[in-house]
Image: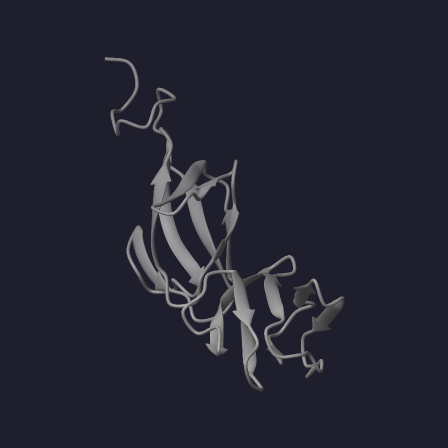
Length: 173
């Protein structure tokens, strides 16, 4: 049988079988027959493992039939972390797992993964706040993903003084 949340499949090579998520498929085979199974995750999910006769296999499993065998493939959806920037300031968001926004603002993670995000203001701007799952945290945010989440970092432009820079000086002397 196939358990999951997407359009995942298990393909039974040599026996002409394809079984999709939510289905229980079976074939009658003669003793000594070889069966090769391959787990094929759909976009947005990953193969989490086998149970039953293939419990120790990777994404592929081979069996030689000597009696009735039961195999279950389990697929799990990735948890997507999407980050965005807001405000009138300029900055970027960096993450320890591939996020570097505004270039790469979304990544898929295995549920349970902890991601550290840093909001880094550019010259002339300051980090203001997070919204979403990071609300209330400082410029560094730690997120443990159990499901897809969104977070926005707001940046503000630093006020300038009379001489047009942001050093707090009072203009010409």
